[in-house]
Amino acid sequence: KAGVTQTPRYLIKTRGQQVTLSCSPISGHRSVSWYQQTPGQGLQFLFEYFSETQRNKGNFPGRFSGRQFSNSRSEMNVSTLELGDSALYLCASTLLPQSTDTQYFGPGTRLTVL
Amino acid sequence: GQQLNQSPQSMFIQEGEDVSMNCTSSSIFNTWLWYKQEPGEGPVLLIALYKAGELTSNGRLTAQFGITRKDSFLNISASIPSDVGIYFCAGRVNQAGTALIFGKGTTLSVSS
Image (cartoon, rainbow over all chains, first blue to last red; front, side, top):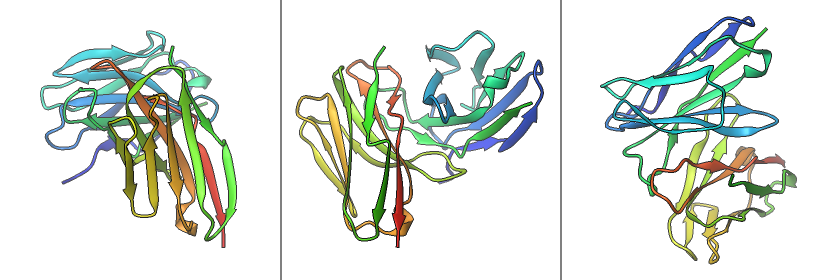
């Protein structure tokens, strides 16, 4: 069974630009969560999607948004990029968004903002 | 909001030594997870714990769900060089649909 895939793996953007990252969950998994990982803050939860609906949202500004498609694939978008948005963006999938489910992570997209 | 305090922040050990790390919280969790992350990769799930007091092993790794439900421990026995990486604890509070909260990680270095 293929794991969680994320594209692209690396991305370089400049301040003010926008970026879209993609995540394909494990086959059969319907819940997708996004995290931002930085050396200083560690892993921080961005949002979770299930059945094309956002179920949870972390404490990030409105420049960070996401969506989920009917095939469970998810995208996240960051608009008006800032230097501080440089991070590893991780996507994780679970079968269902239940409290006992474990999450399986993709390899991440490394975003560098210049 | 909830926070997980993970310690130690880093460890430098010799091959063959045992390792212990832990996570504590002021909140009650109903799920504890331990992940390992290697450079350039996403975290990989090592052990999942669902019941207070539960002790679960995965090879040389053993993790425990604290009986107070506010802490968890991970032990690695007889460390080897490939154990190098960042180990994260993660927990979910006792409410369905809530997000995982992660500790800041323990960076493990093993010298041979």
